[in-house]
Length: 175
Image (cartoon, rainbow, N blue to C red; front, top):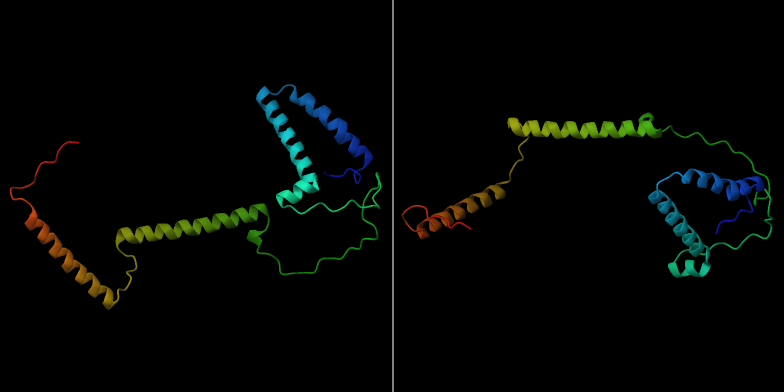
């Protein structure tokens, strides 16, 4: 389970008592199904935190065990870290492409890519309709195989025609 020892005591009290009080006030006016959903979610979250807080359960599930608690951590201390922190300015690197930075830039890059795909697909379709698409070259072996297939198929069709009864088409039975 998480530890509240690192948290400011005022914030801890606010989260322990203030947040549930405010949540209860707002939830009084919600429909019953939403209250039931929140209640069920809270119970399942509590069970999950209890299970994952237990090292035996973590071992059974195959999750790495929690580290042992630090002895130097005292309740109410601001931070478990000791020593001094130094700031090191970032090293300059090559800037990322402008269109792929941030949420809007990424969306624009995605739209550009989608537009290029649509344009390529439309060009291919127009070329197919107009008959101007690039023809693939067929090797001599493929032409020979195609000619052999056509001859064989022509013979099969002739033999099927000879096997049919004369007198035109036969009526199909209604199903």
